[in-house]
Image (cartoon, rainbow, N blue to C red):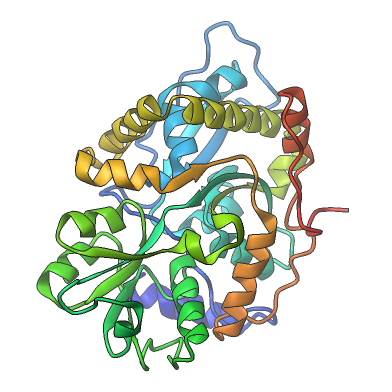
Length: 371
């Protein structure tokens, strides 16, 4: 995040009773700009019935942890469910800009990480968004220079990168450091471990230059570092019950949800069917995701990065609500967030309706759903 934007974000957060600092998204960037939609709409099906909106504006990251959006758009699975209502896609490289786009009406529905979802909901006092579904779990690793770090205790005194101050991986790493009994100032990143906030796009160069000793990052950045000589030291899945934690969920503006419930339900049908197709056709889905990344960034991921990254991500419909609450608690303990009121952040009724029609079990909101 640029310094000017970070200062503005922190200043705005300081004025809010619930927030100590704005939380940002996880995600591997591309060469595209935030909010880039390339001026295009996915063509609606010819002669198909239009829903209550002419189009739906869908935001997501050019990131493998957003595979549902990548594959669903690439294979036309969302459009099939939307019929005559077209998709207008936009890609983002950071959570704050996607939340801003949702709040301004530039997008209606978005695939996004847990931290910006929490921040957006809390900052609006529960009025801006709802989480309406899950998309992915996992896909985050601690990778290190094996010449300098051979075991976890060796991290003390080293320089470890995270994507952004307060982003999902930053919070997870700060929480892990605290559990080790080490001390780090969350804002500056200084302490027993030096936490270096580094955009995922530049982290590989920082690693090659020796300015960082490792990184706690999402895929495919982690696998890119490994392909350049780093070693995986920890998979974040191993820190969570059942090795599951939310890395990507689906949000919608409350205004759009109220005005166009049929469109929201169609997008969720597209998501559920895309996820089922991905899990039944993993290799083909991996290639479809890579084709989408190539269109967005200008180049595909090489196999030595794509294959291990893809294996570490679980695609699912469940938003894993209990883990979102835990991630909020981690941010509070790190001093990045005042205790937020997350009651009502979820509305899983449309998703559960879709799941029931597909013969799948309902998912749980961990007591944080609308009443």
